[in-house]
Amino acid sequence: MNVKIKKAELGPLRLGFVPLTDCAPLVMAQELGLFRKFGLRVRLERELGWATVRDKIIYGELDAAHALAAMPVAATLGLGSIPCDCLTGLVLNLNGNAITLSNDLWNRGVRDGNTLREEIKRLRPQTTLTFGVVFPFSSHRQLLRKWLLAHGIDADRDVRIVVVPPPQMAANLKAGNLDGFCAGEPWNSVAVQARAGWCVATSAQLDHGHPEKVLMVRREFAAHHPNEHRALIAALLEACAFCAAPENYERIAGTLARPEFVGVPAELLRRGLDGRLDFGRADIHAVPEFCVFHGGSANEPSSDKAAWALGLVQASGLCLRPDKLDFALGRQIFRSDIFEQSLRLSRETPNPTHHETESKTETALV
Image 1: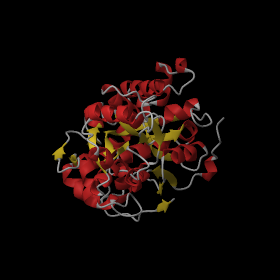
Image 2: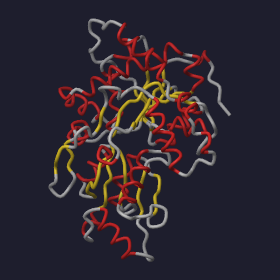
Image 3: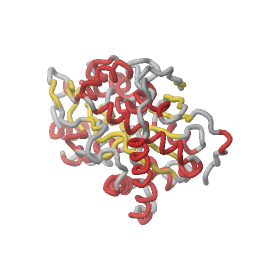
Image 4: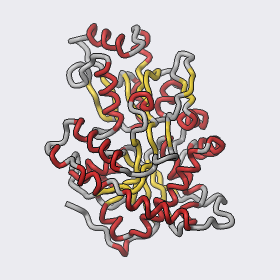
């Protein structure tokens, strides 16, 4: 089932994002006037979590969105929603997540995965520890399960894994509703700053170079509005390059700190940009390539990234038809051809004289 979008209804493009450090390309494309450069009017819409983003894309309430890499696959197959053909022509970033455990576990002697395993055994069967992830089909769920398994912990039997929107992770950890979580920045840094938790691993360490966020659209939108779609990707591609440059980190962090975007202190947002993380307990050190916005083939929705997303959906155990997760589906959803067209558009479009003048950002808070 697909909900129809009428061409006549297309006004300013409605671009959704979840408040995370890696929404930076969407925010900075607006702030730098890059959407305007490519002839677009864009309204940024802040959403609480990924299920909302998925549903608004499916029902045409958003034209495009900052989305988890496997979300277009899950939506196309109707996993957790009605089926809706979706695709991506741009990877927004690689890596960017971390696993944070509660200070309560630290106080009980947990220092790593091995001591966590021993604590789980000690608590059994009276208590089962609860860990948060942001979406059933997410790198976060896979990373957490991979890390637990590496330390002899069965994610299906030994712990409970629940879905929590990213902005609610730190508060739930502090309240004792979670014993740990895997989420993107800045929510790990927020938990550490609040003395609610400490970081034990990052996605750059556990699955280096994995695709994290993509630009997700309905296939119908891409077909009916190809020029706008390519222009949107071209603008965001230039914003990704801006976000990758260290000299821009201060400006990016300061912009994201505004309440209409992420709304946490700039110093915490900067950690997810430069990778200099506070792991808690006076352990501050740099994680190489903690979050990669640009460089090499990072932004291309290539066949290897498609294979990674299909593998994630298959490994979830939540797809009842794993035979559908084949190369043809990956090529249908991860559109390197649209990316190449958008890349050419970016190279061929001259910069206006004042394209870096601050734009009047039109943002809807939800």
